[in-house]
Length: 566
View 1: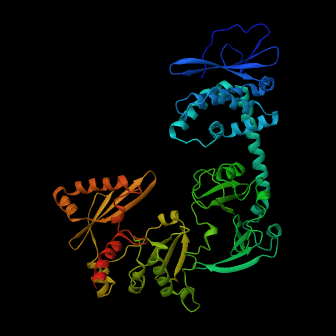
View 2 (view 1 turned 135 degrees about the vertical axis):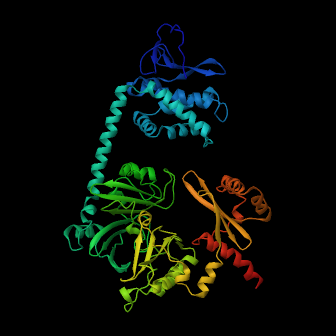
View 3 (view 1 turned 30 degrees about the vertical axis):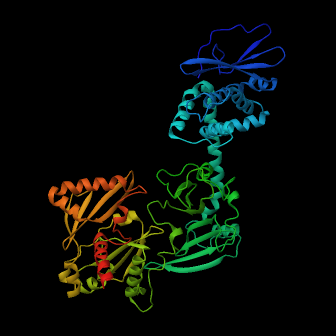
């Protein structure tokens, strides 16, 4: 920004006020005359040369700049002026007079106004710079990667000039002290709810929470899974809710957004987390609760508070500063990152899949449950794990007695929990809701050949199923069904994975017959290049259907033309 400027005569009765932290012979500086007025002098590099500019400043500006705590911040006024008027990234060149307006804005208010501006600047520098540029143009400037990169270089290059080591240490201590005070305050407000976790409903600490929520709850009870757990919910009109499982408190909820029971949402959010409103952004929540537990981010964030874990749910993958995405706050005794969330126990998609009957073994109607699960898969609400037993084969395999445990696994499209429904040779049926980590630790029992347990129709269907005839073991699989060939091309972008299942056209089949597996590898690379694009040409050919395996999707695509002909 600046350069060493040759000493110039100040003139009789003129004193020089340097604006950098330490006095020196480098600009910017203000020459103050006997009448109290002065000129702000700054040198700007432009087109390979340095141009000197002088701006008239008033006695009020000079009085503010005299303050040691604010003097160094005057450098920002010059930096903003340089960027807006002279830098090549600027939308258009602006006259030095506009630069003076920025300086006036920063230095011209009362002490409290200046302090508020600087506090906001220090907290989020890039936002403050953007706001100042918008002030110059009277409109939001177009953002770009190049501009953001320039702003970062500007900050890291100038920060050592405007902040001494002592000031930096003082700010670090102040930040640490503020964080400690915030942690103590948050821990204190959540303490009654943490104390209630794992306690019985009649215990005094639970009764205290009931009083905090407003007493007179609406009570709902139901059974979950098999063997069954007894869930009991105490729902309050204030937006609070207590969940008990088998007689002890498992979770406490704060429904931030309106619900049927709480039309106004949780009314005590500002008391629970001081300064936080329903329209709070993710960054504001993290400022209030502290940084989330490492790795516990996404549509929800987990914070360790006192003796429990506070999990905050958002409507979407909202940007950090986007307001009005806060949905639910859940308090539990353990981190649910690798487990299922209590808030999902009433998921409208999968909570009612287990059909009970008092007369059936273990209280489970096996046939009705299988039908409910198959209907969920057909509707796209559930996804079936095809490395486990298919739902339609469970009864036949169980009746054969060839397997110790006949188990099917399915995933919910809404809450993303997994269900494991199992028929056991020497025990009652079981139905569990588990996390993805739990499923990965389980190995399904090997299914015997269909000839040992299937009827004639089932054996015939197996013979007609698509056959996997080739794969490179990583990025593509080739299936054959009759004379037709199908390819599953694995796709990925960063940490996101997917696939395209396509039927090879005649020209592609000829290419494969000529070049072999090398052609399939090239084809997979071509598909992978565009699969995240809105104009992906392969999307219209994708045969993938929610909840179906590749083999089932291929069978469905072949059956469709037959049904049309019929």
